[in-house]
Image (cartoon, rainbow, N blue to C red):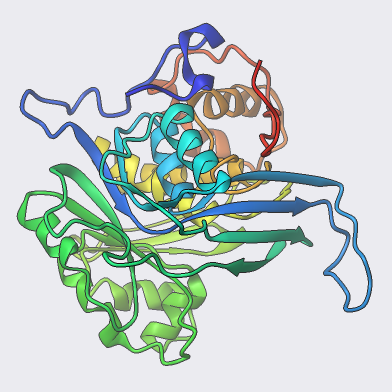
Length: 370
C-alpha cells in the first residue's frame, strides 16, 4: 500500500506503524475493513450564521473531499493502519475524483469496491458555522447488489460497522467468526423510535461508540455517563463522546471506567470528527494501549480534525499529532494536566519536524496537479 504524503520520509518525518509491536507472521494483511457509502463532500466554512431563507450567504472558505465512510477510512489510513474499503463509486467525475483520492492519495485498498455505470455519486453540501454544521445530501441507492459488502469479508484484525435500525448486516457476524474485532457506531434515528432492539448486533461487537444524545436516547437515560454504563451491559466496551466535554468509557468486562476532557482548539469545521474519533480509538485498541490512553488519543485526533476543512481532508496523520505534542510542551495554552495526560505520546513519537498548527492544501475538483 502507498502512504499519505504527509507521513513520508520526504517530509522529514519517519513513517510510524502503531501496530509494529503486535504484528506477527501470518497476521491478516488488512488491519481494518469498512463498507458503506462514499459521498462527494462540498464544505463551506467561515459562515457567520445559519443561511437565512430568501438571502444569499457568502462563505469565506470552501473545500471538496470524499465523505461518508471515506472519512473514517482516510483517518485510519493516515494513522498507519492498512485499510480496506468496499464501496460503490459512480462513473461520473465525482466518482473518479473520490476513487483517485482514496486509492492513490491515501493508499486505501479499494479492490473490493466497484464502479457502477450510469450511477451518479451521492453528494453532501456541509455548511459550518457557530461550531456546528448543517448538511444537505442527495443521492440514490446503488443498483443491486447494493453497497458491496461481501457476505464473506476479507480477513482483518478489525472492522468498523455502522448499525442501521431495522437492518441486519450479515458480514458483521462473519467478521467475528473469522477472528476479527468489530467496532460499531450508529447514526441518527430519523424514525424517532430509538428502539434498543435495533442494537442487537452489538452482541458481535467489541465496542460501541455513540455520541451522548444517541446513547441517552437508546438507553432512556438523561445522563451520558449513565447511558455508557447501561450500554456496557450490551457490549464489552461502551464509549460515549461528550462533544466539547471530551469522552467517557466503561469496560463492561472489568468495570474499568475512563473519562478524558477535550483538547482546547479553535474549531473550523466539525464534519467527520466523530469518524476520526473512532479511527483513533480503534488504532489504540489494536495497538493494546490502556483504556484512558485510547480515549485521550481518540479525542486528540478528533480535536485536531476540527481545525481543518471537511471529514477526510481534516483527518490528522502522525506529522500533525507530533507537531501538536511539540507545541503543547512548549506553550502554556492547554488545560493543566494535559501534558501529563498525553505523556504516553513520548514513547510513540520521534521529534516533530514541522511547526503547529499546520495548514494543509485544500483540494478541490478542477485543479490539475503539476
